Length: 278
Image (tube, one colour):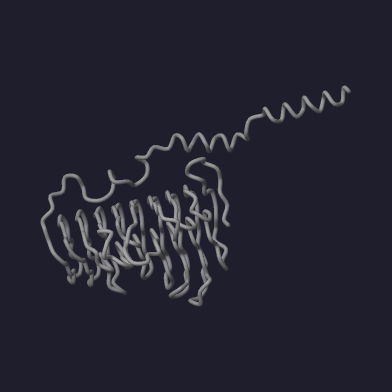
């Protein structure tokens, strides 16, 4: 009888015990995170003080030129190295809204608002190419940023409200092969659809090497992030997902196929709990 009472008391103690301190700490951390710490409509895009001049389609074909303060109703095509596009609004239903010609380096796109309209824009990309993309507000496109090339920094951008006509496969950021040395850091990428991803990394067009996905807020899609070597484009290596906050996609947080990325300190955004790779 005394043994039964002891067992019952022990069970009551276990059931009443608090969660491990690490879990509690992570949940508390989640509650403390302010929206202002993440890229959003108030801290990305055109500076509030900027005065915009109307413009149509724009071709940047002079090396080192800076384009600033334009309200562009049409496409931007960057054909020369070391071009900077800043403090401008670009509105277009084009397939490529801002396109950097393959092989062109040194492009900087910063503090721009890129609006893909959301209709008549099958397959659209907000930005496609390689370069430095910082603090842009990108929306109503099928794909926010498509990296075509290497040596690219994607930081502090707000990619959201993905919307396209046709039969879209939504990706916030897509890296589809033939890429190396990519850093994706401190962006907000929200895909409210049940497909495809916030960040897609795959070898469809070629091998992948050295892609760092760190300290982002990544939400939704079928899987929130992909790192896939399922195609015949070559190997996928040097991929890392670290310190990201994730909102679970329809099927899970990640789809990892035929490669082994680094996965460290990624947490569920709502609960603060650590999440593992699939």
